[in-house]
Image 1 (cartoon, helix red, strand yellow):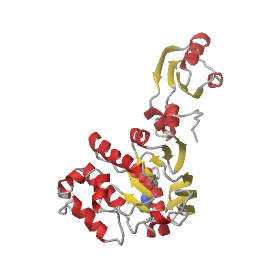
Image 2: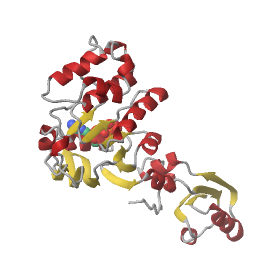
Image 3: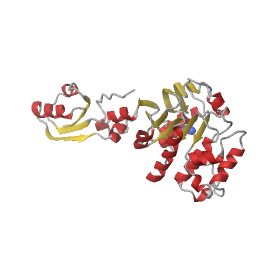
Image 4: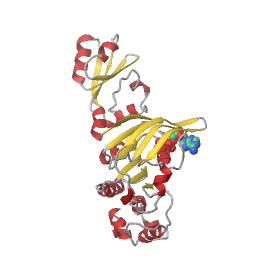
Length: 321
Ligand SMILES: Nc1ncnc2c1ncn2[C@@H]1O[C@H](COP(=O)(O)OP(=O)(O)OP(=O)(O)O)[C@@H](O)[C@H]1O
């Protein structure tokens, strides 16, 4: 789906948050999909909305697009109510599926979309920006999933939107398709456009966003730069079998961010794994000690509460919010 209207850039409100969410909740009957989100996205930021299935990403994006109303709280887009921002052509969206006619060529599709609006960027220009000028004469039905997404991106660019929303735009693409898609997006964001994209892929968020907002079960659980989110994953996990152990004393070791004891199996996440290992070997009856690097994937799972519970209880996570 794309939303395009008139060319807006001359009338952009300035120095306003591109997106402002204040205390936003959304209920679907008994289901509370969004549980109180406060978020400010600044003009020109490329922000990843990262979270597992059912986290509330699409629900939030739909509210920013004015497709649904929050149950409580407020959504502003460039200082306006979402519907007003969209009516002024300030917002475009690239969704996962739908909206393309297989028998038209790539160029015809963009030209047709452009013809629906009063004033748009030139077709050739958006094809070039989206990196699909060389396949402009190809029928849409013969384009790969990645090429079709770049076509949706080209269509979204016609109105020269100040804010571009992308809901899991690379789902189902292979690595090369994903790379080409993001290269075209990144080339375009040099123009200062604000981009918010939802993704399941931590690597994608880390590689292509200036800022990662981690969302889980309708709440923001971490918000920071890729480097900050990576720092959460920079520690190590120490595991050992123990008899009696003082978990409070271990939690007090500098750099320890979580301690879990399940039966006789102790798991400690720490920045300084040597200090933990030294303590366990010198001061306890620990055996079978192992130290493993904590990957970014593990940090993500812990932060979004998706890891198995043996690794998450007693935790003292410090998110970079
Ligand atoms: N129209 C609806 N009616 C009832 N429940 C809904 C509706 N839309 C979403 N939900 C529920 O709200 C929660 C959040 O869903 P949402 O689609 O926003 O998550 P998501 O993070 O986008 O997930 P995914 O990555 O799987 O697309 C889920 O529990 C979902 O089942």
